[in-house]
Length: 520
Ligand code: UN1
Image 1 (tube, rainbow, N blue to C red):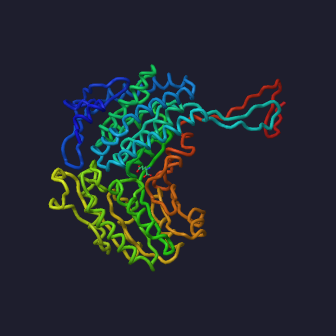
Image 2: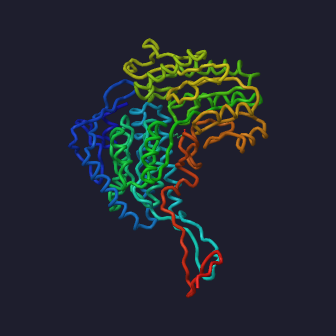
Image 3: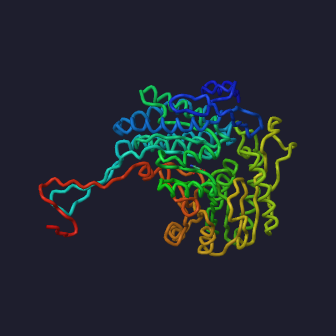
């Protein structure tokens, strides 16, 4: 990658420390502290970004609030037109934005670009919705009374996003929040600030061209302490948080104390179930994608795999062969031939290695991987200094009492376990705290319907013969149980960004009381 040229095209001037605060203007912070962005593939420093001071946070929230008061006056279809221009500007930079994701997060080129496309796709949905958001008109039981619902803007939306989808998840929230008439304040992961700065630059230049305040798309780059300030501030009306269950719990509790709305997208511990009657080749291809894609660092990555006993041995050996060939394509993520990039952070290596230790001490067998990639195995000398590991398959004979399988480890570790009946496999799918995504491989129609029904998967996302990851934007995205219950992206997720009111208008000259009450 020609990094200086890429930075230049995205307006990133990284000669000195870069501002990480945008609130209508890029603020040179007086905090004196910076965070550093590293390339996970090489370990090299990409940029230093200034962390906002308490005063910067304060002025940013105030600016977002003032900007929202201006936006809420604008009819939603006009907001849609502006979003269309934002979409066009982002689409013009789709390859460069994809590449900055590849550079800073470490996902492969096709997945980096795909993530930007995910933003564009949600912008398409939001543009259409800008002419459709609203409530229903209801029949009143009273004479000459009108009843209905109105969806007004909610206010200021705090979006706290994770490193693994450093642009798309903000894009989902921003697009819907914007057409619903809200301002957003984005606190990205502290390890992916450049993705956020580049995206903010593009969006705000369009807002400004339309004479709107850039603070409608405010940015505060920093760590958990900055996020906590946004969460604690009463001027922020909704927090959309993506991250760990532990952090999510703190966010949820703080918001509950203030009766503040939340969208939480927390841990996933996603399972696949392979029935003996499945198209096994199709299952294999899908599992390889969902277990290895983004190097196992999607919330939707396939982590647990239950295989019917009669086919488990042959299926597992095909899986091991597939991992062997995929591992020959571990490499720098911007190269076309690469399938598997690095782990995003050096800390992820620690959790990967400690999970492998737990697998061994809890009776699991490592069938493939389970170690760091050695320097002699690097396909490019520039990989030195990066976070390189081998994707891993572990086999357990039972999942009972295996604590490591209850936990989401953000790395490509797949646990394979046998089962006998579909009911047992569904029970295994549902027995963890998390409930994000799931998939069943079968060709049997009754199994499919059982899987999607009341006695089936308890996850927010249910697939058949597809993969746990790679959901389309049209569906509501999110999970149940400890994943957090919130929904983003498609379906009726937009409703969460509105202030809903039931409206009754008496257009007669009589007092009309409901429920047959008289009060004369
Ligand atoms: C995430 O991992 O937080 O379904 C989002 C998927 C993507 C989004 C993942 N469309 O894998």
